[in-house]
Amino acid sequence: MPEQNTMKRARQDEAEGKSPSTQAGEFVREEMHHIREGKHGAQSPQQAIAIGLSKARRTGVKLAPPKKGKTSSRTRRQAQYDLKKGRSAGRRKTSRARSSATSRALSREGRSAASHSSLSRRARGAARRRGSS
Image (cartoon, rainbow, N blue to C red):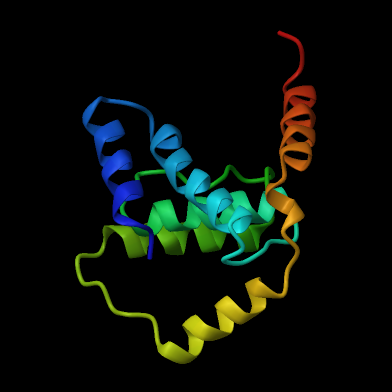
């Protein structure tokens, strides 16, 4: 579950009319903080970003799933599932077994995914793919 401050900032962004990706950025930011402070790890910056986007969709940010061909069908399906979870009113608590299993798996991952160098490498790669328009 995301922190209250993060949800508040995302709601504020929504009230200001900012895009869903900006709202979701707050959740990604929180995820990076979690990794840096040692709460858990991630295999890559992409995984850390994906976790943040998933949290955003599940809390009601209207962030569309990725386009066909951009990512795997599994990722797109998961994003659609997360969106559906975010739209539904009833919030069921994740079972303790599942929650602790996820936490244990993430805690075994490295912490370098949220380092400044790996994030800048990811940003440069993304900019290169966008081209120099």
